[in-house]
Image 1: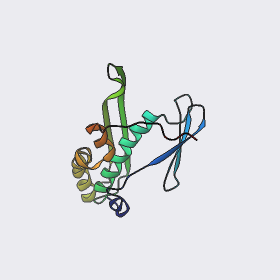
Image 2: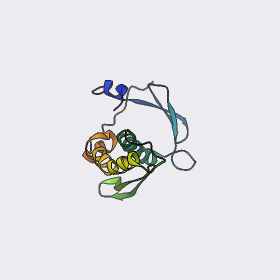
Image 3: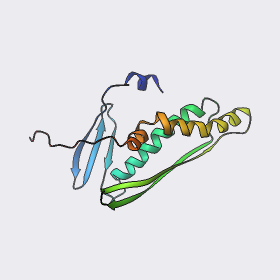
Image 4: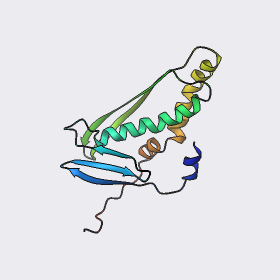
Amino acid sequence: MSDAAKNRQGEPRSVQLRRTDSTVFEATNERGGAISIGAGDTELFTPVELLLASISACSGIDVDMLTSRRAEPSDFQIECTAMRVRDEQGNHLRDIDVKFTVTFPDGDDGDRARTMLPRAIEVSNDRLCTVSRTVALSSPVHMHAGDAS
């Protein structure tokens, strides 16, 4: 975990969304980053795609930090898939699967990184990745109206 991330432990996180067009929103964070989100009728990421990307990126960062101490990967890809279902519980995702395809260079350092990879994925899944842990633990989401302007 980076020093900046350690310093944010226990602090609330937030993003702000602003409607920019019909079914299009721009999300911004406190550091000035921005991303546009759409309903799926354009090239913009949908909220579900962002959730899958967030799970992948969160765990990918963990795995990268743990394995790249041993060797820098020559290729690092993650694919995240899920089944979108509508049932008596409403709309939700089921069977979320995160597949890591990581290549390390030949040699002792690459061998150490390859050996570490399964454990790094396991630790990310079981303890480190805030996003996937939140989904797995089913944190309540509270939605409410704010003061209208």
